[in-house]
Length: 280
Image (cartoon, rainbow, N blue to C red; front, side, top):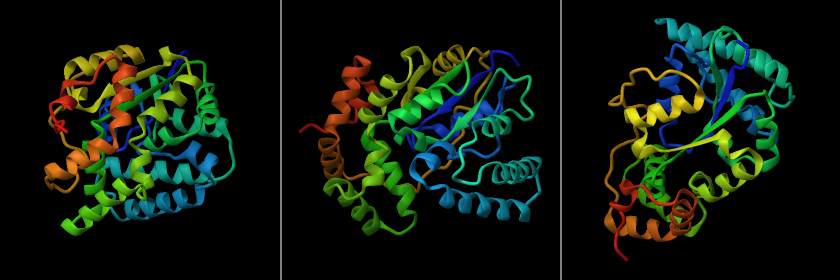
């Protein structure tokens, strides 16, 4: 289709990207690969293609053992194609685009949902913006403390309270760099707004994503017709655990620069963030 929109969804991790990927995957005007998170641009920038190829191969091996559904068969086919298209280190934007367009010639929207792209440098974001004539970026933000706590629970799994406490300590003492990086909204938004036109960026809050109003805003941005969404569907839920008030206060204080930046950048903080704040 001429004037096809290309969408990049950059995260943040644990901020609703998987739910949004599922929604757009099922949208009649969109075409996305069954494989979320291609890690094309971050592999090229950071030299991590070998790692992500191993991950894709492991998913392919698992998919080959379970072809009980049409989706599993499609996932297997998409993984096989991707491993043949991208060797993890050679940039070939034409092949990347052909991969994403295959089967979606009539779609109004195609794209790549890789939250890790939110960590990319300005030069790479500029290259992504120039990939086609109509590139759009979507960035989801979640209350910084809640996002980190969900990330911690996902990483700790069922290892218990000690593991949770150790990861909270890592965030507070600055050693849990991977977790902290993914809550650095200030850095990501500064890079994005320097690299791409502001009108090509759509920002949504996780806390407001699962509403008809948010879907209408997103679909208008992408130039597609809103269709019903399963707002109560939970995707990749982390292990449940309550965040102690003391730890919330410590994390909130550590992440204060992020809250301050988002408030200045967006004009205000969403009430869903401020209502959870612990008084100093």
